[in-house]
Length: 259
Image (tube, rainbow, N blue to C red):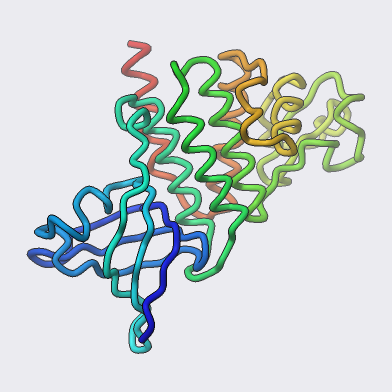
């Protein structure tokens, strides 16, 4: 039973017995893993702080032939993204990205581009001097990029029915059922559409192809970020086949701040 090692991001950790933890990690070399960290709650050497939510670590573990769970031997701390932990808006967005990855990837399916994108996105969010409005737009572009890498890319380049290019569309709606935008003419016979500005769609479409480090250069407004959330969040839940609990928290947070 050889020891394995990989950079990893902790997606979740739950108590198991008096001193152990069940850890869910997204690793660069082995994909998403679940493992038992024996004595993690009392260890001051192998795990101190390194199995907290969203910790970026070097994970060392042993695979067990008789179990889907690996045995986590140690986790060497790399970063804990302190800027995210100190800001509720940043924490909410990072939690949503972690939840999307958790439910959008299979166990032990290696996906290095997705890992690298998630890591770069968390670092970007962590270092933002303030969240609104730029952070909201960056969050939407990160959500779209992560969904795209997992095979759930929304069709933002042309009408999903007549294939009219986005640049030629003056008024657009989004169809969650069809997974993309619908032009004004085709929308006449469609149902359950979500109105969305063409400028918002262009921002999202450009973000799907841009480098993550370039996201702060995009000129997002609060309105565009809200419009993007209205189409991306239901789209994500439909394609992942489940409600994303972080979205409820984000809604409650927005209401509390607004109130």
